[in-house]
Image (tube, rainbow, N blue to C red; front, side):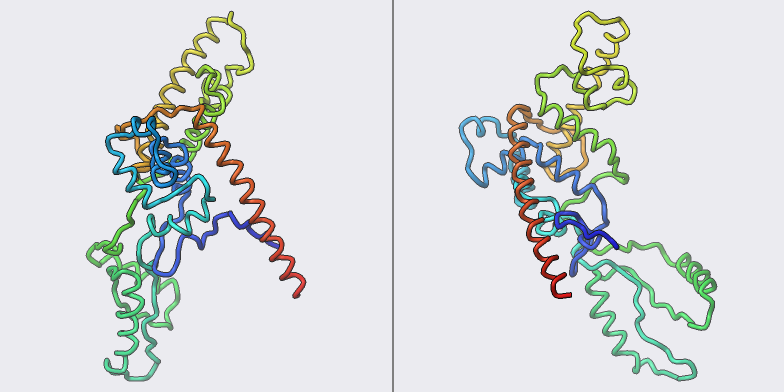
Length: 317
């Protein structure tokens, strides 16, 4: 028996809704998590909620209007679970405002029957004014498929027909409000980036070599360094490893801070030059702690409702 998904777990069906769809990818969740860490995005949240104090106003980036525009689209990410946020806001920002294009059986032609074009008008109109409109008027062809052919022969002939068509875009004319950047998402790299930012927030005073070793950030140097070794007198080899790890983590922090700050401007994943605010990791740690506590309570609430509903359904059966 398949174990039911918990209510905060994303489903494959969550990537489409009536007249909306997008390609399933973990990239949206990564952007959500990087937004949670961005100091610029946090200022936008405060601007829209409790207001900005004197220090906040002094720290505002010169392109804060762009950050506010992103916030108006994506909203608060601190007191919401990803699935709830995705269903409420994400899909309509990252999705295409049309149904996903599909193959359609427009009309049947019965063997041995001579059918006039007029007899097909209703079926064709239903397709042209219904499904095709819903799918954004994508480039399509109408094909007659003899049902008596073998499927292998149908596939062969269809491939030949499609290869003869002039290459046209199959996308709808309208595009998502925000699109993920790049052709291939490097999920492992982004996850490592989140980990090093989380570790830095949890231990802001740690030297970078120790931070990198604890987070196991570098395949080359992490295994050579013991983060629990506080010795000041170390070998020349370990000294070199510490120095290299320090450089790696310093570069990584700048890189992933930039990715978080670009996310606040609606660009993800991007390392474009950006006005990167001071992350103030001790304050970020408190924000992460508040978020974690809220998430724990919210998941407990959702789980109680979920279990109550399951028990009610079981009693009816």
